[in-house]
Each structure stands twice: as structure tokens, then as C-alpha cells.
Amino acid sequence: MDRVCVVTGASRGIGAAVAEAMARKGYLTVFCYDQHQESAEKLVRKLEAEGFRAVAFHCDVGSEEDIIGLISYAENLGALEVVVNNAGISESGMLQDITPAQWHHVFSINARGTALVCREAAKGMIARKSGRIINISSMWGVRGASCESVYSASKAAVIGFTLSLAKELGPSGITVNCIAPGVIDTDMNKGYSHEEMDELIRETPLGRIGLPEDIAHAACFLAEASFVTGQVLTVDGGFTL
Image 1 (cartoon, rainbow, N blue to C red):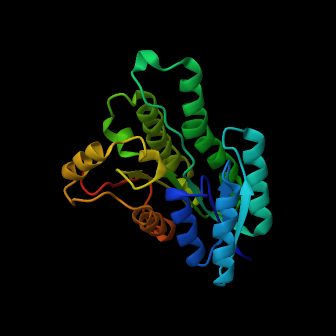
Image 2 (cartoon, rainbow, N blue to C red):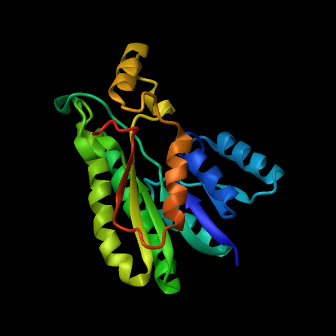
């Protein structure tokens, strides 16, 4: 039976790097995308040409129906062993300027979507008494960020959820961990000016911005670690020290 891995938000950035790394580790990897179908399918074609196994699948993690369909699809491919909840969105601005609709949308993707994917994936994992769940939070969920209160709160919720679920699913042989990336070279940081990026680099002890591949390495470690659960792995070059 094929070993299956699902990565949400896998059409670009961190998600694409994680999904590609998992495919190269031998998993039949499901690249989940919402808006960027062409990018996801291009990555799948690249991996297939190299002899690895991957498929692209549309899923809006804000939709419970889509999530149920995603996990059902993955389980039909083989044994769903690894789930990486990477899909996420951000809203910046002073708290008084964030609308209730914006607040709801961020939490529906970052927190609720993560929880629903875990709920559906856990069903098969519990039956098999094994599985790896990896949730992607943010260093801002660890320490908070000015003018990003909604995003920080949603990512802090992912951390709290991860710790709770690790206790809940541990007796079933399932590990649940969280990665909290620092400043990573992705589209999410396009709003920063060159001066702001330079300042972030100066504040990072390792003296550079992280790469999506840095997060992929951490995800691969957690996917194989059988005695690590309930942990928040901050991959930020030392920024939060």
C-alpha cells in the first residue's frame, strides 16, 4: 500500500517546498491548492518526470466539504501517513481597522481549516494506530507582532490546538507537532520594503532570511520522528531569541 502525504497550500512557497521534499522521501504526495492550479500541476509534472509520485488536488480549507473530499481522496490512494497543514492567510493593520469579516476569514483558514483537516485525517490514523500531523504556525504566534494581531492570534491558536491534539491522539500512536517559521522568503513578505527586510535580517542572529527549504527540512524530520510529539519547532534563524 502506498504511503500518502497531504500538504495543504502546496502550490508555492513553504507548502510547495514541503510537498516536494515529501515526494522525494517516497511518499505519494497530494499537492493541495486553492487558487494556483497551474503552479501545483507544474510541480507535479516536474516530480513525475523525475520518477516521483505526486498529484494536484483542489481544496479550499475554508470549506468543510472540500476538506472531507480531500481526505477521502487521499485515503483512496493508500495509507495517509503524514498531513502537513500549511495553508494560511494574513491580514495586517491596527486592530481597530480590522473588520469582523477579515477576522473571521483569517481564523476560518488558519485555525478552523487546520482543525478540520486534522479531524478528518485522524479517523484513518486512529484506525491504523499511526500517523504524523504537522501544523504550520508562525513565530508571530509565539511572540506576537504589532499590527498583525489577528494573524498572530490565529497562529497562536494553531499552537494551542497542536498541544492539545498531541495529548489526545498520542495513545493512538499519532504524533502532532508544530513548526513556527520565522521570516521566510515567500510571497507573504512582498509587502515589506527593502529597508524593512534589511532590518529583519539584522535582527536575525544567523544573518539571513529563511528559505522554504528550511521549513521543508524540519517537516521531513517531524514526519520521521516517532518519539517527538506536542512540540513547537521554531525555525527562525534565532529571531525570537
